[in-house]
Length: 313
Image (cartoon, rainbow, N blue to C red; front, side, top):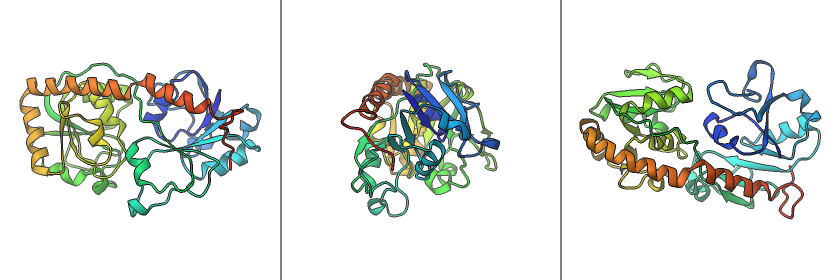
C-alpha cells in the first residue's frame, strides 16, 4: 500500500515504517511542522519517500494516517480527493481527563487508534470506532553495560513540561542523573540531545533508567530502555503499571520508595543487571516490532476497498 502520514513523532514513525508498504511523508518549504519530510536523526528505510506537498495530487495514496486533527483538512486540500483515513492518538487527554472529548468523537467514518489501553479508556471517544495498537519498538539490542553509576532520564523539553514530565521530582533523587532529550539544557544536570542510535548507546552505559512522568502516554523511551536491558524506576501512573512487571523495576506513587529503589540499583550492579535482563525480556515479549507491524497490517487490510472501508471526512 501507499500510506500518507506526517512526520510528527520520530520514534513512533520509525517503528511504523518497518512494514512492507511505501510511506509518503509531506515536505513543505523550510521543513516546518506540517512537512518535515524524512527524519535526519532516525534510521528510516528507503520505502519512506518525502513528497513536496504540492505534488501529492500526483501520487497514488491508498490510506492516510492522521496524527493531528488539522491533518484531515490538509489531506483533503493537498490530495484534492477523498482517501480512506485512520487517526492515531498518541497522547493522554488533557484538561479534565475523564470528561475530555476526543476531537474525532463526533464522527464514525475514521477509526481512532490509541497506542495504550489507558488512553482508550480515559478519552471520551464518542461514536468514533476505537482500536488499540500497542507500541512496537525496533530492538536496539542488549547494549546494557551499566558501567556508569548514574541514572539516565529521557525528557524532551523538561523545563516546559515540568509537572507533566516530573522534572520537578528529579532533585529528590540521591544519585547522579544524566538528562537526555530535545531542549534538555538549562537544568543542573548534564544534558544530551542525540540521535536515536547515539541515545541508545549512551543510555545503556547508565546503571538504571528513571521515568518520572506523571501524566503522559507510555513513553517509547521507557520501552527502549527496557529493551536495552536497563532496570526501571517509574511513577505508577498511566500505562507504566502495565508495561513494567515487578521483576523489571520498581513502580510506586510514593516518592521515597522510588528514591530508595534508584539508589539501590545505582549502588548494586548485580541487582541492576538482574532486573535489567527481566526488563528486556518483558519488553521484547510485549512490544516487539513484529507484533506491532502485524497489528497494523491487519487494520490497514480493512481499509480501502473492503467492507470495513473508512472514508476521509
